[in-house]
Image (cartoon, rainbow, N blue to C red):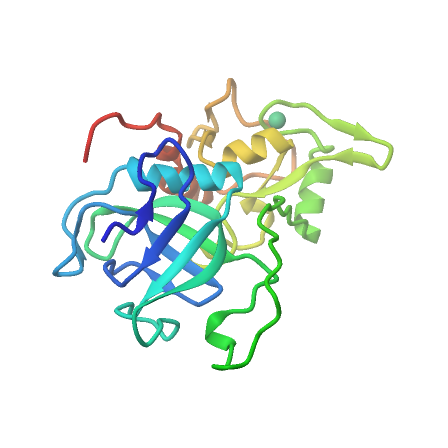
Length: 262
Ligand SMILES: [Zn+2]
């Protein structure tokens, strides 16, 4: 009952099966918090050991990095109103939006993946039997969505659109370009606030590195993953709590893949 396949960890996952074996899963239909594999007692349906960033978990990390969607199947034993009544059902393409490490309900380290159903597909749970839904579009390739709130705009302006990691500014005909990076991510389950203390002004490279955990910031504002310290300007100080949250959930994703077997 391997949920993620293939599990070599050398290539992105093609499919995952949600069948209810993991107590930390959460299913909202179009959005899923999927628990990585390993450390799980399938019969008791609970975690009994830490998960590692190997095999299927590493495969899903590649989906995130490459932007490759994954096919999601739900099984009837899944404890969710979106589960099919019998058997297994193919529920379409989902993209891996985010991943992080967390302490699960049972206290062991788990990897969590936020999956979002790609648009343009009729959801099986909304289609009446015998009625054809709209034909699914194969919009599988995804562009990163960069949020820009009024606050992130202000943070960027305070920094003169200069990356707080490398100090570069990107000048275009339309003005300077930088990205506002939320330190503790917005949205459930992170629920980071949209406040200036929770936003960094970063260039696109360092934004991606930050979101993928390849770059973190210490309490002393020293940068792990790039040289130097976080650049500061008057009037904007990132919150230590937010930086700590980011480290606790994302820092270990930058470790090279473990070679050992589970
Ligand atoms: Zn930069």
